[in-house]
Amino acid sequence: MRVPIIAGNWKLYKTTAEALDLVNGLIPLVKNTAGVEIVVAPVFTVLGDVGRAISGTNIRLAGQDCFWEEEGAFTGEVSPRMLLDAGCNHVIIGHSERRQYFGETDETVNRKIKAALKDGLTVLFCIGETLAEREAERTFDVLKRQVANGLTGIATGQLNNIVIAYEPVWAIGTGKTASDTQAQEAHAFIRNQVAGFYDSETAAAIRILYGGSVKPDNIKGLMAQPDIDGALVGGASLKADSFAAIVNYGA
Ligand code: 13P
Image 1: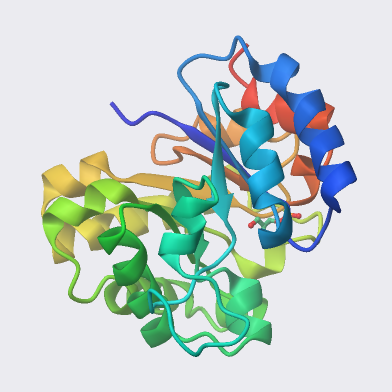
Image 2: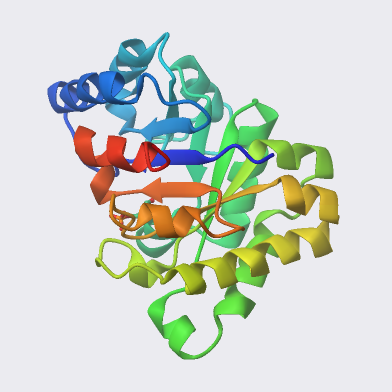
């Protein structure tokens, strides 16, 4: 059974006071939620405070990125070990905004995934095509390349600690969600790729999240798709009530 994950990517939002307001508002709204893994990914500077606030609750903590070295002269970077130290169990890697604005490539994403796995973090590995790629009918080629290159050199046993997040770039922050059918088609394709690179058992076990304008009113339809195992939520995760409504989609 694939346990669904609903993760909130707070991106570059929320100071300490705002982050604590959000998470303290969220805790009571999801405290009785069972059968869903709940994850929040705040900015690095508030990880410690948010981590303390959610300690003992059913909410888990994620970093939004990490570097591939443990430590060293790498000004501005944060390593998997530092994320663990701050209370994280998860890390988002390869988000399209990092690929678009910070020069991340399949190769750097792969190095980061390996480093995070080595230190015991669960990786939320993001992939997804741009609008131009979809319009040029290159979606499946892009997804295939991102999966193949992102997972290069990663052994079957390590896939337990990887969650794939399919986020079509054209659906992020635009209010344009992929239709349930479009999302399902991409998820089934990704699962098939994993079956091809690994085996069908591994593919059946890996969780694939959808991301891109997920809201309380479209989560149910997405979650009803056989290959959608949760969501990576941006904008709607910045308010306790809307994120809780997404987390509690099954209630
Ligand atoms: P939105 O939900 O704001 O479209 O963002 C999605 C996303 O990028 C999550 O990582």
